[in-house]
Image (cartoon, rainbow, N blue to C red; front, side):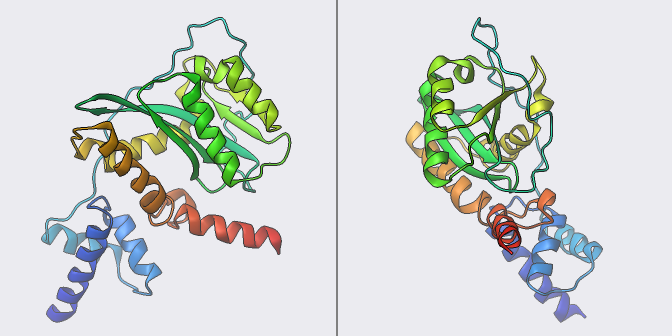
Length: 251
């Protein structure tokens, strides 16, 4: 039993290390099950505790929405229907910020609500409308949403701007906006930002925007989209869940 525990503890340590030290026992246990290991979750918890391994814990963070403007506002067409059966039918977007020694780096993302995959993102040293337009452009470069598919965001000036609204119309996307001061209307992207801050941003001090950009790019594209096990998706990564969803839809 001792030798078996030592072997399991080593495998747990490797999984924890591969997650950049972010996984707690639920995700470690899920990864072991994906590998065909049938072990009790309590046992995983005990071995992690004995080896000083734990997940990271989320802090509160503030949003960036500035809805104090006179631009046209669109209704909340999404209405918190965050469980979407097909990809490219409902997207959600938002902006957050990251501190570097050079100053703030702003990040805009577009997420497919069906798979929770981040399909578009943009980073800049400003929060002008170009930031969110570039994220939308990237998403549309990778995907082909049907005409009338939803794009949901808060009612910030970037999303309400004429330039961004023109970009939505040009791609045949319907606009949906959260109610004033209601972060729960865009909870899925808010949750992603919380995860990003907890697992990456709050654990690093970047000297430049360039180094922060590189780390965030790798986190989104390599770790979050392709490797990180998502509790809402039955402990599959967004990429794997999306592949299974699209295969089931095709069948």
